[in-house]
Structure formats: structure tokens, C-alpha cells
Amino acid sequence: MNLVWFKNDLRIFDHRPLWEASHEPCIALYIIEPLWLDDIHTGLFHKIFLRECLLDLKSYLKQKNIPLLVLQGEAKDVLAQVIHNHNIKKVYSHQQTGLYWSFKRDLKVKAFLEDQEIPWIEYKQFAVVRKLKNRDTWNKRRDEIIARELYPEPKKQKRQIDLEKSFFDIEALGERKNESIQFGGRKAAVKTLNSFLERRGRFYYRDLSSPLTAADSCSRLSPYISFGCLSLSEINQAIRKAGSLDDFHWKRSLKAFESRIWWHCHFIQKLESEPEIEFENVNPGFNGMRENDFNSEYFKAWSQGQTGFPMIDACMRSLRETGWINFRMRALLVSFASYQLWLHWKPLSDFLAPYFLDFEPGIHFSQLQMQSGVTGINTIRMYSPIKQSLDQDPKGEFIRRWVPELSRLDDQSIHAPFDAPVMFLTMSGVELGRDYPFPIVDPKKSYDEAKEKIYAWRKSPQVTQFASGIIQKHASRKNKFFPIQHRKSFGNLDCHNYPKDEE
Image (tube, rainbow, N blue to C red):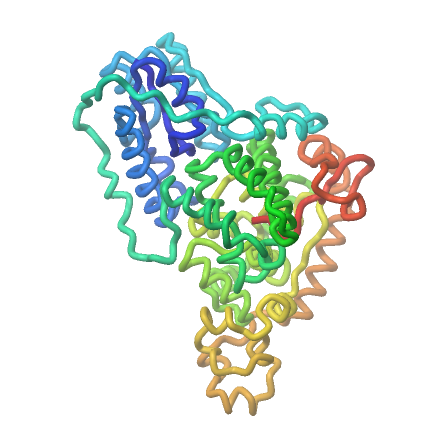
């Protein structure tokens, strides 16, 4: 029989490995890997979401008479067991660009299968190119891959294959107790896609920056893309079909959303080309800039939503409860921690990953490094938490929801209670230091100090000497989505050509 090894591609539609394997008798396998269960980036949200994805996948496969084995263990050992028990002649799967342990896992699996003389046939799931030398033709190749024809559902097997009863208990992954976390599985993914393209996304371009409106107006497809419940090609075609709507707001929103989808593979390609960015600064010239100045008290306050800056604390508390927050607020959280608190990006990355339901390694590490300013080729972004609060939550509605201890403050004072007259605080029954913490840093002083330090490092020879190599390996080239006046270019290369509010 053929074996289809599922990883971050938990669907049956537009799944080439499954389609190709189903032309002959086949079975499917998902491996619960201890390295994933114990990884610092894996959180309870991910386990609950995975459980729901697997139950959904099992149901779809059953309709095609394709059994799904869910087994726990190291991939090589599990594959050896399945191959022995079921006389497997070929293994089919998608390529995966993930954490470094998954890269080492694939090397072990490849060596084992070669030793057993069993072909391992891998197909691209995303527009990520292995052994890519530079980005000169990547854009064109990316567009061709994403715009390809979709693969149909697998062929129905003539008979249901009986398997041994040695299954991993999917229920052990975790029990859903929080309805505010998105539900896993393809059914939920398709429903979310349809609601976005039929109703929720009309004002996407306008609403994606504010945490008040983004939760509904953003697509909310990111976890379904990360777990593979939907393919990018499938989403791309759905966008193109919806783009025929004769409505200014829809056209503008779909164009904006399509550009965000474009950046998905761009960032994952960075990790494929340089797996070390999971652990190391993209630009080695920044080594030592923050690592030795880590303030554990600052980190604790930031991670618990107790910094004394209401918008920062509201964003953190919302993320920890729901597993999602819009891109602008993610950037704000990282910017504040990186500059005003001067915290190194790696501990921030490790903390945030388990709470991001849509955690995608290639996007995650690149964004953390870009937002913390250690690439040396991207614009330095230092967000003011007070300005962002006033711009994105002018009446303090989001803050009142997540920082209820400030709910009685007026619309102006709630953004910076430490600047409000004592009389206003007293009248509202809010005592700083008792009901809500004083700010852990002086906003202006910390901003000015961080600005001076980051620009001094950026101009240093140890940083600038690596810039051209980073541009050649990772920078996007000019593309059709962005007008020339909005591009920050090094010659013909766009080094900061990414949208302000990626989803």
C-alpha cells in the first residue's frame, strides 16, 4: 500500500500527496511527535486545535475509505512500525519548513527510507524553494506555484482497510474550555473563508489595524493556513472569484488581502534558506546588543499584561485569552518590549509562540527580528503605545474590555492614566499602584534612549558589512502589489517592501 504522511496539511482537498497516493490502495498517518508536544513553541491552544483538525480529517477520510492512523513517537520509529505492519511501498507527503527539530527529523527519515529502498515522494505545499540561491526569480516562481490548478479530493478506496487498534488517544491532546479560541478543522476553515469573502471582509482595508474591528474584519484564516486546513492556492482562487464584485470597498479590500497572502511564502522562504534565524540574529552585527541587558522584571510585567501602559496590557491579556490579535497590535507588543523595555527578541519569541494559535515558524522568527530591529535592512519601527491607543481605540473600548480595573476612567485618561490629574483618578475610584500599576518605564525617556542606541548600532561597521549579503539572500524584489513611491529600496531591491498591517 501507499502511505500518506500528514503534517501541517490537514485536509483532503487540494492535497497532491493524497491525490497521487489514492490511485492505489493507501492509508494515512499523523504522528504525534514528542518533540512537538514538548517544544517551547507548542501551547495548549495548538493541541486543542490539532485535536479538532484530526477529528475532522478522520471524518473526511472515512468517506473515502481511507483510514487515518494517529500514532505517538519519533517519526522514524513510527514510520518503521507502519511500514512493517502494512507492507508500505511508497511514502507521500508535503514538504515542511518548520522548526529546526523537524529539519533534523526529515534527515533521519530520509536516511531510513533510503536504507529500506522505499521512495519518499514530497510535493510543495507552499511556494518555498529548497536550495534557493537568491531571490532574483523567486517572485515569478511563487506566482506560478500559487496560481496552479487545484487537486481534487482523493479517489475513494474500493474497501475499508482494517488497521490495528494502536491509536494515540486524540482526546488526550486537550479539552476545549474556551469558546473564544477558533475551532479547528476544515469545516470551520471553509466557513471562515466564506464568511470573510461574503460579508466580513468588505471593509478589511479600513478595519484591519484596530483591535476593535480587526477581530471581525480580518480573515481569521491564519491558523487554518498554518495547520493546512486550507491551501494558499485554494484561497487565492477564492479571492480571484470574489474579485469580480462591482464594489469599490470589496475590490480595495480583496487587493489588500491578496497582498498579505503574497507575503506568507516570502517569510517562510527566509527560514528555508537560513534555518539559523530560529536562534540567531539575521544580522550578526547586532550580536550582544540586548542579550546581556535582559531585565527579568520588565519581561514578567510585559508577559502578564501589567506594564502600566493600558493598550500594551490589553493586547497581551487579549492574546493570552483568545490566541489571536491583529498584526498592528502584535507589532506594538514586540516594539514596546524591544525598545522601551530593551528586551532581546528570542525570549519574546519563545513566550509569544504558544499563544499565537496561527504560529508559523518562518513568519514568526522573521517578524520578531524585523520588529525588534536586528536585520539591519528594514526600517526601524518604534511604536508609541499611547499614540497607537488613541489612534486605534479612541474611546478606550478595547482597553475597558481587557483592563476592567480602568473601566471607570474617561475616554482621554484611560490611554495614559499616569498622566491624568489625580482628581480624575480619585473621582473614578482608581488608585495607581493599588488598582493598576504605575508604568514600568518613563515612556519618553525609554523611547529616546532606545532610539539613540538602535541607530548607533545600525550605523556601526559590524552591522553594515552584512547588509548586502542579507539583501541578496532574503530581500523581496519589486512586485506588482506596491506602488514605487512606497518602496524602500537598495538599488533594484525592496528591503522594506512589506505592508504595515500584515495579517
